[in-house]
Each structure stands twice: as C-alpha cells, then as structure tokens.
Length: 373
Figure 1 (cartoon, rainbow, N blue to C red):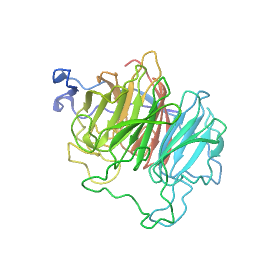
Figure 2: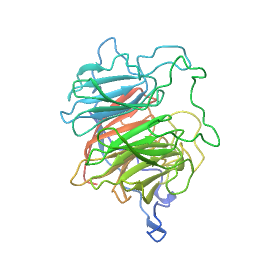
Figure 3: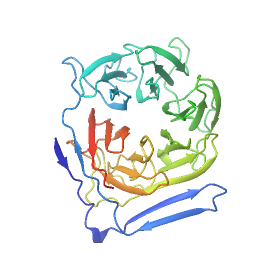
Figure 4: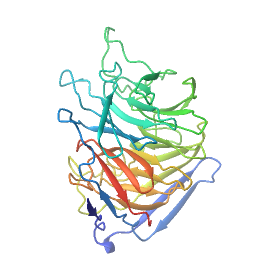
C-alpha cells in the first residue's frame, strides 16, 4: 500500500476559509452561520492497491454502488455485464467478495429488474438491497442471494409507449408504491425504509419493515422539503433522515415523519489548480457539479457517529459531525490510487475504513484513514 496525503488546497493566504451554513426549520429561528479562517484538516489515508480480485472473465463497468455486511464481505453493484443496443442497454451486475477481496459469487444473474445499476445497501440482518434507476425498482436479496422483496414495478416491454421516463414540466404526479428513477434506500432502528425517489419524483418515500407503503414527502423545488435529485440517503441512530439534495447543493435533515429540521451546506474553498475528473472545469456555484454538491452520504455505526460526504468536483470526501461541522477532508479528482472519478457511493463500516465506488474509473477503492481528526 502507498501512503497518500492530500495537498493543501493552494496557497493558504489566497483562501478565505470555510463557511458552513446550517439553516434550521420553521421552529429553529432562521439561519445559524459558523465560520473559521482555516481549511479543514487534511485526513491522511491509504488506498489498498488491487483490493478486489476479479475472475479472469469478469469485468466491472461503471461502479455505481458498494456495501459491506457484518462478515466484512463487500458487495459491488456495477454497470457491467452490459447487454443490448448502445442506447438503452441493460447495465447492472451484483458481485460479492470476501473480506480479503476474493471473489465469492454473482447475485441475481440475469435478474428481471436489472436495467441501470444505482446503489446497493446491506441492512442489519445482512439482507442486500439494490436500487435500479432504469427499472424503477428496489430489490431485496436475503443472505443466501434469493429475492425476498420487490418494491416498485418495471415497465412492461410490450406496452405501447414503453420508453425512458421523461422529465416533464410540470412534473407528472407521483404514484404511491411506484418510483421514477429511484436512487437509494436507508433504514431506521424499527426497520422502516426510506427511499430517495429520485431523478423525477424528487421525494422521499417511507415503507415499514414489511414493505408496506406508509407515506412520502417532497416535490421538485429548492425550498425546505423540496428536492432537485435526492441522490443518496442515510439515517442516524436517533432516527433522523439525511438526504443528499444534490441538485440544490445541500443536505436536508428530517425526522422520521418527514418534518424538515435543518439543512447543511459544505462550503470549503476549491483549490485554484483543481481539475475535474472529466469535462470542462465547472464554474457554477450551484447544481450537480458545483463544489460541495453531495453525491453520496454514509453515516458510520455508533456510538460516535460521523457523516461522510463526497462531491464530483473537486472530487473530495468530507468528514462531518452530524450537526454539520466539517472535521476533515481527503482526496481529489484523478485516476491514480487515492484519487477519485465521480464517487457514486460510499460504504463506511467504521470511521477509519471506507469503500468508495467510482463511475469514471470503473473500480472500488478501499481506504484506510487516520482517525486523529
């Protein structure tokens, strides 16, 4: 393994510091603003080279999801095993590896729901849940790899007008129990599931432990409780729900019934020499590619929980306290170990160990972090 230390973000004299805003809900008395004139600490870390050992005839595509179970087995949800035409091809494959990165098996080979991989999560009972953006479905596999629950429904191939969903304006009203380009799922201690739904419906759906529909909240927009692509979701030990409202460049926090509590924005200055992983250098201060726009969320297990968040540009991972203070950061865009190409999901089995799924680099990196921050 090699030791990586992220470079200080440009000349310190040229950087004005960190501003972190936490906007409270209607009962919170407005906005709270915390400032510091120093960059957040840079977290030292190691990236384990060649962690995953793939069989000779198996290849990853864009890696959309990664998760870890209680045995430290790693589940990788990749846009590999592609079949079909160049446009609209199925691109989803779920692979399992042991704690040392040795290949174990493929789960759900040629599954009816496979269309366009988005995320994978493991619940406290070691069931494996996947969200498929293309089929609009959430699928649950038990530890043996058998399907035990299905949420949502794929369009029928024979239906007149079956086609990719359109982003209509005004939006089409959502339907209970149905998703439109679903993105992620998380659970509270009672087993209730919270589904970020997603690119079109822009809402959060809640189901109970048996998969029964409970409620939903949210709609497209930029106000409190509105969303512009809720892309990732996490629940803390107290049952609070954290939503990566990516297009609005913020994290919104709710109680389990959908009451808006506060929002968090990550306003860490971008290094002057920062380069994007692909494409032109972003200049916008809002939207998906803006610095600090949250693509992923992961909350570590207790008793001391922290929140890990990543952005696409400048390609950093941020470590936050649950109240929104930036405790440290690491990484940057690139193709080498310790650099990142659009992190799409983070698994955080502990504060000092992360697994990151990258779209552009077609890989999972295992990161070992120093925990002095």
